[in-house]
Image (tube, rainbow, N blue to C red; front, side, top):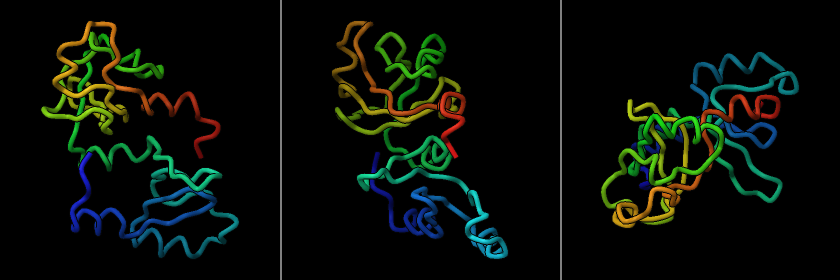
Length: 159
């Protein structure tokens, strides 16, 4: 992925808010209306982008996918035959790789799409674009980070 431009940074980080170690992206209008609710009674506000771990590291959540997919520099498209495998938390194999952005480096964060351009998750490339072309069909091309199947698997702990 590429660094955000100055304008994109202003748009993205205009109203982030933290509550109970979770980072939310909130519009100004919704934020003003939420001041009528007591802080202890407020469960969430806006879109959850991720959360801070106990060690202070930030873990990006799948709920940020729709926002971040708009700004992704590196993308990977998976074939329909590999979609379900990916949704169950498996890595993207060469056999499931439909397309990959040209000149994607190794160990680069990518957004995973279906062949119909629907964003379905995040990952990290195991090999560069050039190296992926030379791999055998069972080799891993993209390491799984998170996917939209997380909504179902982690439903009880997500919010």
